[in-house]
Length: 120
Image (cartoon, rainbow, N blue to C red):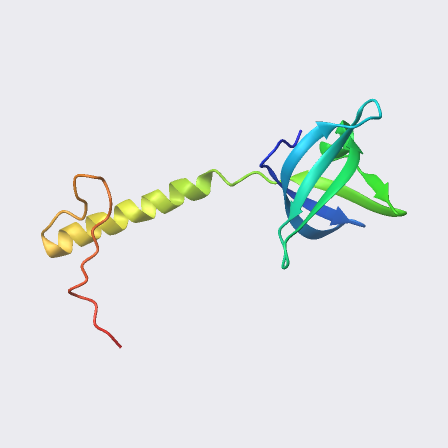
């Protein structure tokens, strides 16, 4: 189930329309229904509150004004961070090998030489 601070993709008639962040989920007055507050990630940013069953919050299809709608929780890709760190390690090794100096300092951050950069 999507939870607070999760990012969801909202589908309208099987077409992805907008990303939104779940701001709040609280029980509605009606049994087994919830008020879900979404911040639509668009320009301008808007917040909406929909009253949905938990199955709809979990990705089940529902209708709104006669139109088919669906929420899909977005999971961040896990392997992307690993690829970035591998590229950074490779770049650091290459920098260390060409300059004869270690590319990191004691804090584990990358040192970038500004001496080699020339203004355009």
